[in-house]
Length: 131
Image 1: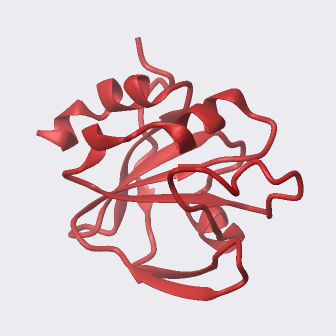
Image 2 (image 1 turned 90 degrees about the vertical axis):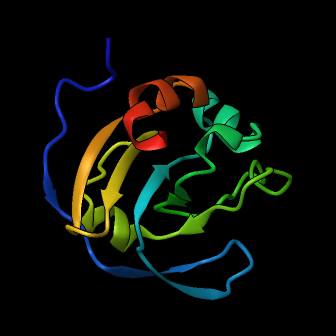
């Protein structure tokens, strides 16, 4: 069973600009296969994802984004950084975090997507991209 029926293939941007939680602007160009995970505060699945080792995703470029900041301080001690990138989320048509998309930079397309419940579940759903 998947968290999403079928991926909606759609265009992905070649690059994006975001802001770190410290207010530093960062630019990123997509290369290869990239997993983008959108998180929000007060979300158990998001918290689990941010605090897991995520070693299973090592073959991919992994980017964790949010539409807004962390007013509650949940992400301060997270193992993985969160970038504030509402424009990227809009471009990828991510409407309701927690959600993930897999981008293939060679085609500039979203090739997989789904809801985030746990790192293991996401890894199972995108196993073909991890091989």
